[in-house]
Length: 346
Length: 270
Image 1 (cartoon, one colour):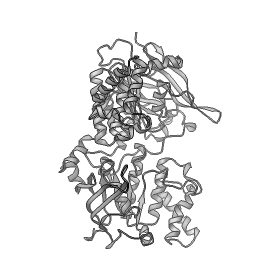
Image 2 (cartoon, chains in turn cyan, brown; image 1 turned 90 degrees about the vertical axis):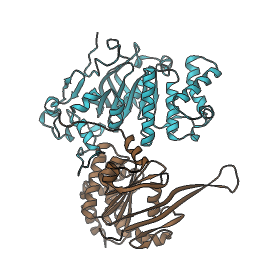
Image 3 (cartoon, helix red, strand yellow; image 1 turned 135 degrees about the vertical axis):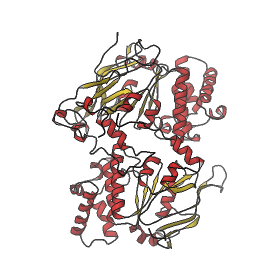
Image 4 (tube, helix red, strand yellow; image 1 turned 45 degrees about the horizontal axis):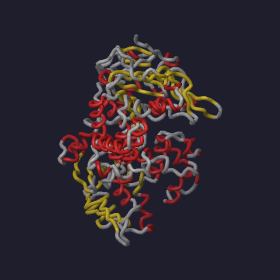
């Protein structure tokens, strides 16, 4: 039986086990921030699924809630003023949000793991990289230090760190930014996770290094079948690495689809605005078609459609909550005028 | 464009020396900029593009007197500006202005926007009194798309994009001959980046100010420049009109850069 939520991502996917349960299912997730005694919603009614060996890209600008969503999935929000107010996160038959810390720890690492944006701040500067990779392996696989070291060495070779047998005893500061991110990837892959979450994994890297790291992630996915959630502000990165895309704005998914269909028929005015804001690389335009205004503050969200104040197509109707329109089997748009606007240049 | 360039940089070399670890008195030499030559004409936008560590920012800092060079010359309106003392550089600052990357770090958080914008006006004696300054500032704020009410407020009350507009207003107020913009839009979200790029291009066109635009982003560089210099490991490996750089790249590194950029292939119309 297929579970239908307000916004279901990818019901029929290219995965060979398409009728099986999705690996991860997020249902109506709501996250709020405690601010001056009030709860302000930052992620609203978010639902999506990820199947095995697929890559879901979540794209959005700062403040769209994309990082908070994955931090909530990873259980990294506890102790902060941000908390999940409702919703469920199903992973491997369990609701992650109901687990105790100990239960969650047993899932992290070999069930799911995460790559962070800034490799310098997420690696411990006073431990050798080999020891940092071995920590997770020893915790989850209960093996000897020697076995863990062999595994760490294999991993460093897999992520193409040159001269891995020397590098394994180096400290993070002795590596370049790209190499540090490779070490992060090695750590995340150490226990063969079913799901890898990468939050802006290449944003701090140069473009040529970014290409190498993205190619590496794709190659590893081919080998291991790991599912990936890739978060990025860069539509180009998403377009080239993901099968599925979810576009977030003000804490909501405003459009989601297979990558191919999304870029063929842009459904939401915001997605189109984002694309038209990027200066083209292979042609010249006199002026960019910039989205006017700015992302509204959390405590001053507009009524109805949250994109409405910046949207060139906005009408009176947009002051009501937009319906979720189905452009296609796998193409979902949260807009009153999705059917009329699709494909039309703004 | 006249034939004598506004800014003419010849055989510029920059070497950073850091103390070597281990040996006493030994130093490591880092040859950050190697034999770089380029010129910027009045009204022209030249971009320096390259990855981190290629020396592009160092060149910007040399030209604003924030760093000193090993050898070479940089003639601005005919006079060499390298090796000038702080006092010697001061009169040039009205003509050579800089837009910084980080809109959060480049505005003093303790000053009102009025104070931030009026300082250069008074230092360069461009206005006689506060009333005149306020009129100029209000007009400039409108030009950069901000409400003149902004004068009474502090930087923290503005978003990143708005702060970058304030930084641009501060630069444009003194009517410089050349602007050095170091990653001026890199910290901004893509929709705000497009707004600020449009604004920069509009102001550059209307005022005719020359610009040295430093960036790692080839798409942004294509949008704003007339000519482009591609830098790699301290050297300019290719310098040409932007059409040539994009349609007929000569150097292997330029081709590598171009092929590394992830692209969105969207069709606006079905």
